[in-house]
Image 1 (tube, rainbow, N blue to C red):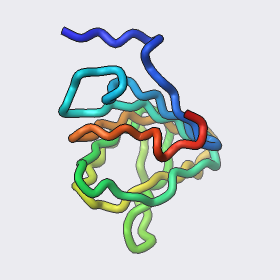
Image 2: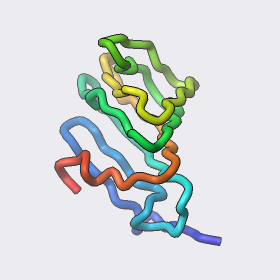
Image 3: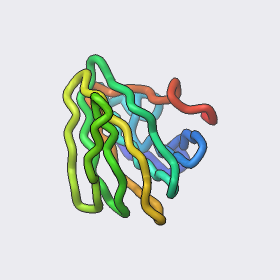
Image 4: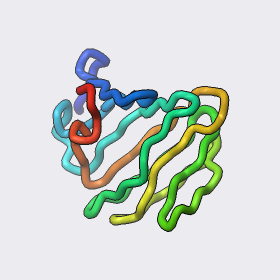
Length: 120
């Protein structure tokens, strides 16, 4: 068993985006997944990107926003929705609502996301 205490959870930040690294290669021995809780403020965006060799699942917990997909496409994404991105799928998120958007991200195999955040 492995218990990860709140004190071991690092939070990464970009303007308007906060990503709590609940389980990742820095605080766990897991070799299978990374789990993050992401909060996106109203008007903030996580730009389009991809992960070449990891799939990712997002579970919307609170609010609504737009998934930013390949070829400039967008899709509504709201509380209760789940989306899966295969290896190499282009994805991102824009919070175009007037409220906080929050989701859980599960990534397999694990990724250390520090590279993508200005404030580590």
